[in-house]
Amino acid sequence: MIHIVFGTLDTWLLGTYHGVSPTHLQAYLNEFVFRFNRRFWPMVAFDSVLKIATRVESLTYRAFYEDAKTNTNPGAADGSALTG
Image 1 (spheres, rainbow, N blue to C red):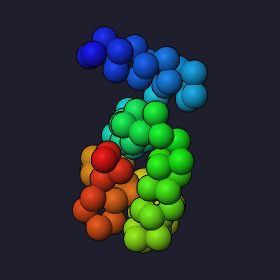
Image 2: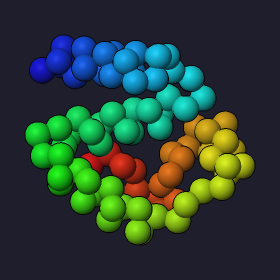
Image 3: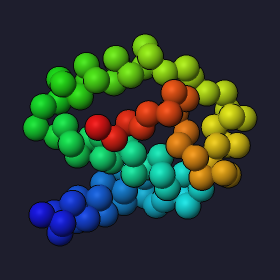
Image 4: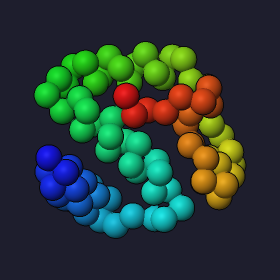
């Protein structure tokens, strides 16, 4: 199973982003985990994104990059991550 996860991660990062910025690595991984955990139920993933979007306060451009510099989780203003 671990080979499937890392193979899919590698393909997804290179195919979608064509490379990864170390500054935003955690955000890339959060998105991958969210998508991977919901890969068999696309409508559930869509509903989850809508629910999360209504509960989480959006970040400003400056706050996003300040969070990335301190290695915190951008996008999780309430302390929750998009991982599950």
